[in-house]
Length: 103
Image (cartoon, rainbow, N blue to C red; front, side):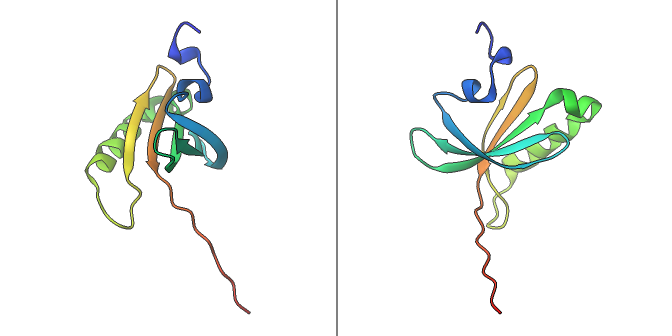
């Protein structure tokens, strides 16, 4: 590959994160579970397709600017942000919920 824009998500994040299962998806992209290769910490990797967003990319910029400043126990923290020509990668704290149902 000659540029990171032509790489797959896994290739782009190689050396930084191991990409695992998909946690969810929406109109603009998907969220995958990842593991930081150096620390072993699990993270959520939000992968946003710029083409799918079109003219609404400014909303992503606002989200990133807000996430950079927030620090609250009930809000996932943003660790890192990467951007290529075609995609944005927001590396965030992952929240794993376990629900118990009692009868």
